[in-house]
Length: 257
Image (cartoon, rainbow, N blue to C red; front, side, top):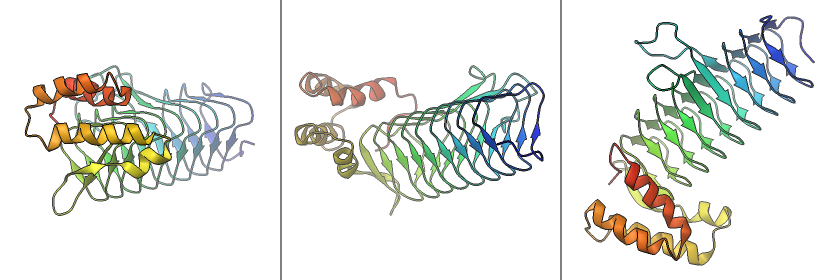
């Protein structure tokens, strides 16, 4: 299952039933879980921890040193969960001492060709990153979010759960959960990701309440603190609205308007 032409550091730990293709490079102190498939010419960087049943395609670079001028060889690591698909030429970099030195990517994510995930990012579960999407350093992407082709996310931004970022959007502030964001003519919110919520099993009642929450934030002319207070009342009836409250209260860059 391991091609003899692969280059594997002697300290690497490879679990059972792992496939590693020719000319793949497995770095120092890496750990690769059961059932993973590492294709030809893929590179797994030093200290990387990879969970079970991940597919990493050719020419991907996973867990290499961060692209950061202040990095000078400190501890840096990527922790990758289970059941992820990482397509050709993806780059995911380890963390820096500016945080805890770790970039984290969760489970069941689809990361398409040429996607870049920068240092110290946090990517949740069931996220879809479409071709050429780029996450700068310290970006957080919550569960079930979708980021479209050629989109860019500014450093320290957060993308909320179930948000849908359209192609070629440039995100410079936090995106609340459930939102649709368009890039034309300018990057701006354009309603709720209704189709995504239906596919995820949200009830009609929940979707109606999420629509109302959107109106509280974007249609009623309220200050953010006033909107948060109204949403806290609404979440007592619809727990899904708690995601709005959590992101709005913790936002450091402000939300997209």
